[in-house]
Each structure stands twice: as structure tokens, then as C-alpha cells.
Image (tube, rainbow, N blue to C red; front, side, top):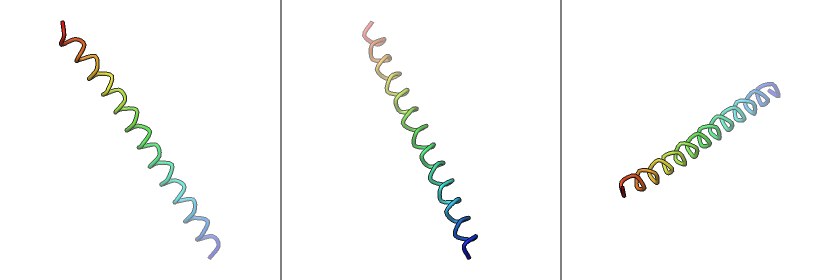
Amino acid sequence: MPRFKVGLLETANIVRSQRYGCMAHFSHYSHVADLIVRHAHEWCRF
């Protein structure tokens, strides 16, 4: 029974880290997209 609990905790930690990694990638890509959109607006002025 304790071994099962440890395995469950490890799985929860792995899922949590993966989810955090996905969120970090998403925020990074949204930041990059925001920069591209800003530059596109500047380029469209010329």
C-alpha cells in the first residue's frame, strides 16, 4: 500500500511538471506572437 501511494505521488509530480512545462511553452509562444504582431503593425505603417 505505501509503495502504491509513492508511485501515485510520483505520477502526480510528473503530470504537474509536464503541465507547467506546457504552460511555460504556451506563455513563451504567446509572447513571441505578440512581438511578431507588434512588429507587423510597425511594418504596415511604412
